[in-house]
Image (cartoon, rainbow, N blue to C red; front, side, top):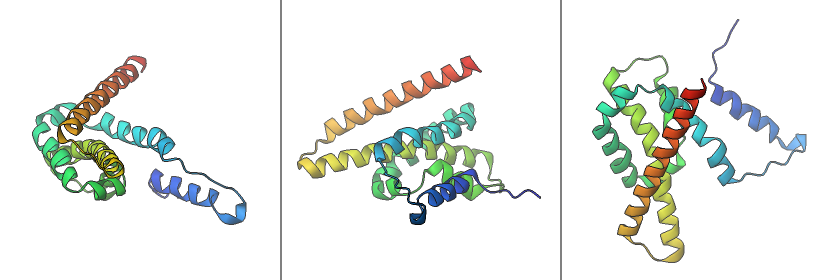
Length: 162
């Protein structure tokens, strides 16, 4: 008998067991390591699966949702689970219309990045008391283009190797 359990839930259960106080293990949590080791593979897997043609066809809707909506709700976007993972879990085997699913998948990929960058700007502004919309916008564009370039390079590398 086979039970279908999402891999994410299995990983959370294993992590909870390892952190159980009776086992005497002490697990330290470094957010930088988490951001480096866990978020990119999750987003990469969903980015690899999304149909590229449909993604670019719905680019305007995706960007409006991923940027506009996220900047309006930055804290909620940062504190919520990775959208692409949550979307897969919510939709599951229930089928949504193709165009809607592609827009939601694209928005999920892009909103995490825009939310994290916006949170970074908010933290810097809160700590320094200085905020420049122009500098933040330029920095955001540079970070976004850098992320796109790195993502394209990694995708090219994976397609070349496989």
